[in-house]
Length: 51
Image (cartoon, rainbow, N blue to C red; front, side, top):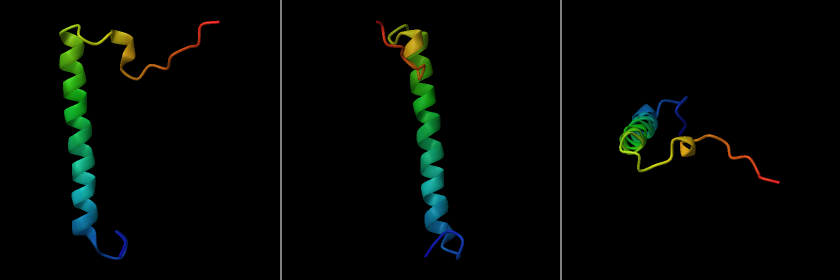
């Protein structure tokens, strides 16, 4: 079944898990950045190739 056809319990559970995982990862990265353990530019900024 799909989320459209009414199996919302399973799909909403997965959606909530994804949201929770994103929030906890953001908190972890923010605390690491505050402690200066992670360089400020490594949180998703695209890296340019040095030529």
